[in-house]
Amino acid sequence: MENYAKTNVPGLYRDLNTNAVINTNDLEYQQVLIARKKSKEISNITSEVYTLKQEMSEIKNLLMVLINGKDNG
Image (tube, rainbow, N blue to C red; front, side, top):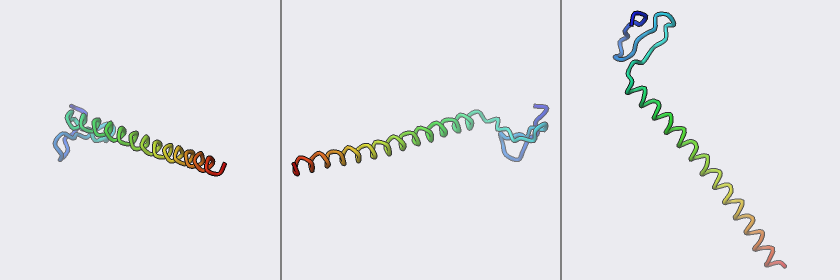
């Protein structure tokens, strides 16, 4: 770790070449990856539920047209 300087936060180092802050805590990194994956999954599920709601509404409207068409004819 010659090119890194300690910071005031445990597990964080500053890269002396790029001045970037580097997290060397593997557990925290894995937790961030898991959180990102869960967030993406939740976003996908939310999108799918919204799409299903729209499709159900469309089906309901088509059924109403079908029912109303039979009553009038």
